[in-house]
Length: 305
Length: 278
Image 1 (cartoon, chains in turn green, brown):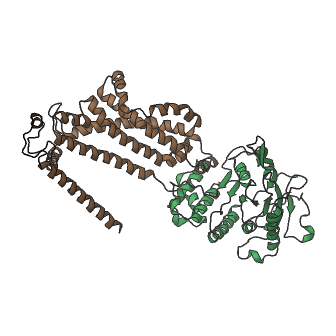
Image 2 (cartoon, one colour; image 1 turned 90 degrees about the vertical axis):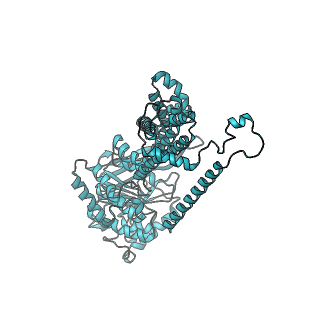
Image 3 (cartoon, helix red, strand yellow; image 1 turned 180 degrees about the vertical axis):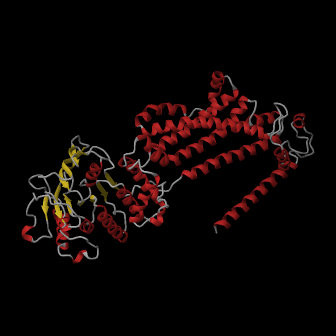
């Protein structure tokens, strides 16, 4: 099997339990992400999604296994992996623009002041906040703050973008608008994205592939569901696309009925499922070849299993 | 509405002031002891025979204040200097001691706040030294430093250091982990994290500590100067008490309050500059 851009290999997280034993949050998480791919991970609370993301970010360490990105092991935080946190994590004493400049300056310290500013303003424009650039985060709504946070992450052009439930704290209307914006920026930047979400529709709208986690403790990344829906996708048009409900029903069924008992395939990797395809070739193989990545040919979006 | 609220508050303040001064003025112009009976010798000596009590009336204090403030910086010998000179001496001591204390307390507080180990190691010292009355250091300071003025500065230094140290350590230790994670994911080095993230995040707490410190320092300087003598508003108050010039004493008390208020307000202004809303 060819190596993916990001390889997570038998990653697990254990904590010492009060009774002296060990408490395993998740074990043997093994999956890959291709360059340019948008992957969401869904699972019930407590399955360790955030821990996985923090390990990918380098902010936390697994108890076993490793993460390899671009052939190098992930051992600490790096500008190559940008993070958008659920609570925005903007620095409250800086304006929206300064928050982005903060990131851009850290990424390219050799850049001139003008270049840093120009670059930062460009990304602020992308999320439609050019008029609010001098406002402090406390003067921005939750949705605007998250846009700034997304702009900061994209502006530093990380090789992998990690989104930790970025829309979890937003109301449904705002969430929809920012989802569209995220899709737009993603389309322009060819970014590889790994995102945590609790929202099945959001995951279908955004991702090429959805990882499903079984329930913790001892959670596993049990299944990898291909979202075989052509891009560009729109929130309003998604319901009419053939395959949408197949994917959606599959995910909902997993979360409601099967997340307790689901396990990985025999090779320790998540089972590969393509609910949108005709029934005869759905879930056919767990060892598909890595196809070339590319968002323009989204129906054939990359998946390596 | 807000404006009229403020105006009403100011009007009430004025009313209370007039009421207070009026009662004061009237109570003083009434002889303390009335009656036809003979006064004892002691009562006469203690001023009982006088038509007025020894405490000056507010009108006298105001007259004195106007005179003293019209020429606050005169020097007529070492025992006769204007109130401005005395206040300047005190302010100078407070500011020097306070500045030295912040030079030590803020960096040290940073270290303690960032390193749990250093916190564990230094906390016992802090807990023992902090409750010591700053004036208790005075004999030791006088003996070691052998200079009254510098000893007073040292006392200010030692009393200013603790609130700044504790607040800096607390502010630094409690910087939100999200912001530290932002620094980490942006590969900021330790020094840049300290200056670009931790310092601005902890600045309001640090300023609070500085504000408490300067308040305490201004309280302590009066007592310290009463001890060391020579110059300063504390010495002046005590000197005027020895001269039985209560008008000057009351006037000095008011000036101490005014300067203390200005010190506090200037640090409050600085705190507003670094304040942020989450």
